[in-house]
Length: 310
Image 1 (cartoon, one colour):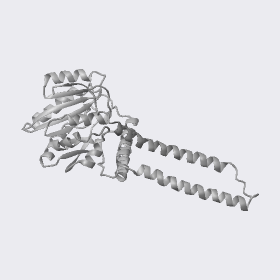
Image 2: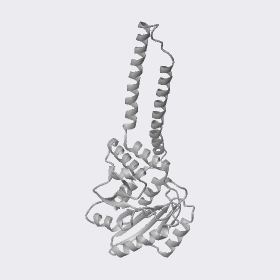
Image 3: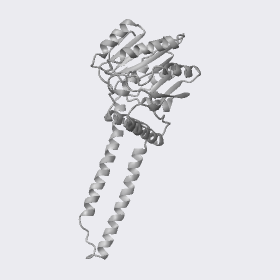
Image 4: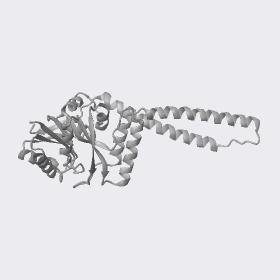
């Protein structure tokens, strides 16, 4: 009998973990009775009582397992580490807030049985804020054009992964893994299926503009060189323009000495403009340096505090 692993990362989801565990178990036992299962929650240092509820869930069902992180290791490291701890023939990843519908599981497994090693769940519709979805769409299209490898639009990592691909992940040794990019770059035969993202069942999202920016910059620095190329080309263009403007003022001053007062306005404008451009590109360069620094330090993805039912 094949085993389906279901991985659910969570952080402060005290109102969702019990209903989610019940929904997943019911979905598999009802619609996929020919499969065995394991349900793994990886908790990213919750402080709202989520862990106590997970302990109770695990005590009542030995097929439900839990990993408690010793600290909050971020929105990318924890799910990636959880994937590497699974033991099933395939792994399905879902969010704990019910935004990814549980009835996706049979659809994902059905495509996997056709021979696809990865089945990606693509958000073609969403009940999230329209402005946020518009900005996401712009980001996906931009990164897709700039990236050196294929990028999958509106893919957040939810989907199914064959155990052969999980073995690839275990051997990556990437301390800052960006799952969406890894799937696009290294993933074998893949099938995309669409779904409508629902509203959160309970609680509030832990994503904010900073975390979204962090995700965007991780993909940008991991899979594009265009930022540094733009900085280089823009620098050469500005240097050439500066030289031409300087020569124009010099010649004009020599020919029309009394009729062409130089003044300080052009100098001040130039200083502020070039200063702002330099600061912007220094910040961009810093993002690449931070990405390199994280990889060079090679710290562990996660430090566990406790695991249950393994």
